[in-house]
Length: 117
Image (cartoon, rainbow, N blue to C red):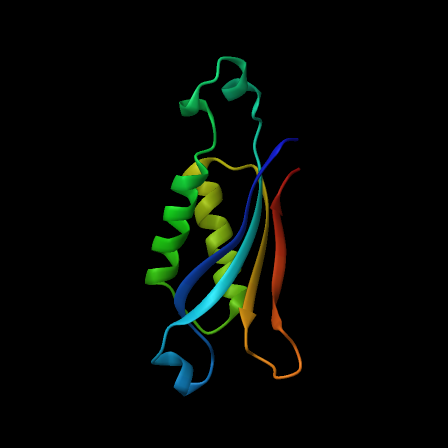
């Protein structure tokens, strides 16, 4: 399976379980690998047959701007569902990193895989 990837996408969202986190927006870093057959697009150099990663990024930013979750796990799960449904993605790997959570770690987060590769 071919993949399309987006690395280091930064989005602001309301995320966190503590009261002080519920009133602020925090930055999450996202890395995505999306399963997509690139052959139809490549055959005749047709953009409309490609996975439009610019549109995927817009969708992610819209999702993050509207999200209000306590857990990074919930953010990741719901975003994966949204992307797979909206774009017809059959498999994805999503890494969500929340910087600044622990003074001894650069970042913490989750990585999930959904669908069939």
